[in-house]
Image (cartoon, rainbow, N blue to C red; front, side):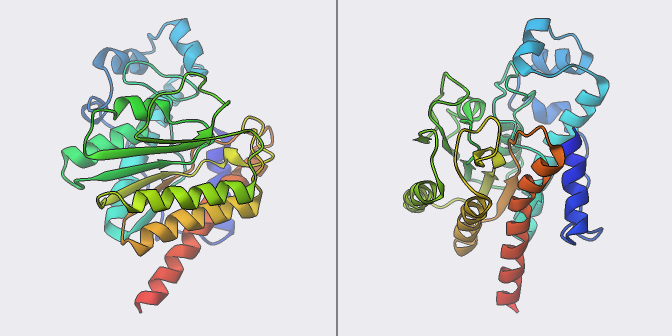
Length: 286
């Protein structure tokens, strides 16, 4: 849990996070979780009655603090989507728990915040057609499966082909990458992907999972992107959305490093790039 606090403190030091632009989310209510998750699973997690096998699959030790953090993070993704629709761009200093399925969690993911946010936005008619672009190094398998029969959402995942999860699901568009993919190769494939997405019917909300685990120093990523490569990735996605006047909600996704302060700085690359893009767009409007 350290990295979330450290990320926020780092953004305050940079002058990016301020009292004026920081919003605190409420825990996601059960009624919204039910849009994407099984009632028995929701209740068992909140009550602390998941089996040891279920907890091992998630990879986290149950506690009341974990329940609070999990529900608040899902609520944060929903709030980020609302703020993006209002302001054009918003970032969540958590989110991207894309491995959770409707009736089970796995891979450090309890509930699938992306799927819950998509279902909530559609249910409340905040949006009618949503794009999920997942650039975390691990495939968004839970997101793909939960949303596979949702015609108003298009899921796209750019991920490591030989990385976790080892049983992949079918997104609407999957871009598998080999280990050791570098900046140039990744960005070329991203450009091709964005061109393909441009040919689809228009969207009115983009949920972007900008995982930092594609970084060359991430301990679980097995990719070879540099800081500059991640900045370029995020800038391409955000500017693509801005050119289309497509509201974009950014999530930090996964990142793994025993040095949590260094990891927080790596996650901050997304927020720094988003802030720069937001300022440029704001100046252009004046």
